Image (cartoon, rainbow, N blue to C red; front, side):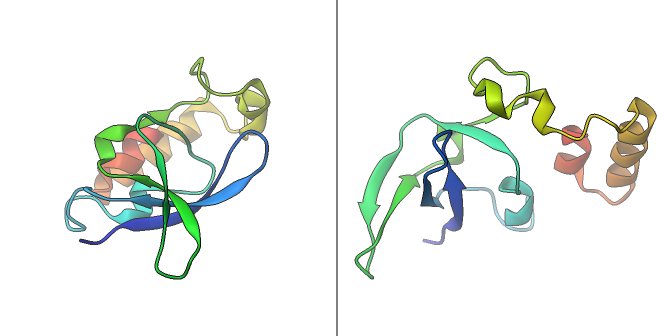
Length: 113
């Protein structure tokens, strides 16, 4: 059973390893589209788990245990809100990027844009 692993940070700037199991097949949705730098999430059923090297991390057993949050969601800490994003990009630029992602069949990227 394979996992996507990434370092995640909380609002207190503390970092920990995240292990995400039970995700879609790589052909359906690439790991790099599921977890990307700067995205915000809430984990519904997290638990700390020790690993074989003696370290620990947060484990989520199913992608359904993660809520992917947009910057305006009430669960996002205020300091991570809209000011954190590059707001200097016009709406048509976002649309063009979304259209390009659709042409490349990168549907999740298109949705994000």
